[in-house]
Amino acid sequence: MLVQIDPSSTVPLFEQVASSLRRSLADGHPAPGQQLPPARELATALEINVHTVLRAYALLRDEGLIDLRRRRGAVVIGGASSRARLAELAEELVREARRTGVGLDELTGVLKEKYS
Image (cartoon, rainbow, N blue to C red; front, side, top):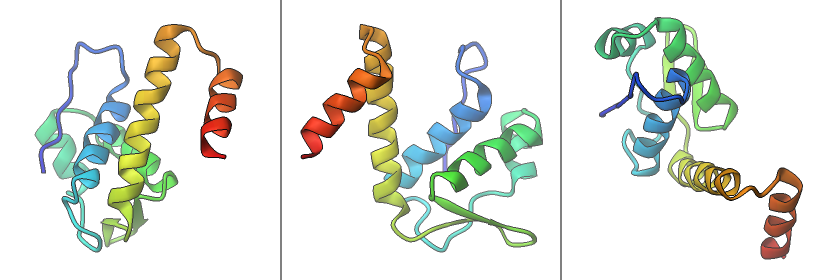
């Protein structure tokens, strides 16, 4: 699994790590039931603080993509690839809305209209 970050980006490192992992999960790698790299190992490989990786893992947990357990690590949850793909699309939609000056209320209205 390849996790990429850009230290010169204005996007916080934990969000970059989470986004990179989300893309991998959307592609089905690793598969449900498989473990993500231990936080300390990934932090060392990326030359970032372990708490940054843990924060990214917590974000993915909150999105329902992984399960975090002591001594077991971060494990991919079933159905994570489709949820990860949806999260990636939502992130892209939010970026585009911000770029074009569309506010949250207007964006929510557009989504509700399209979802109906």
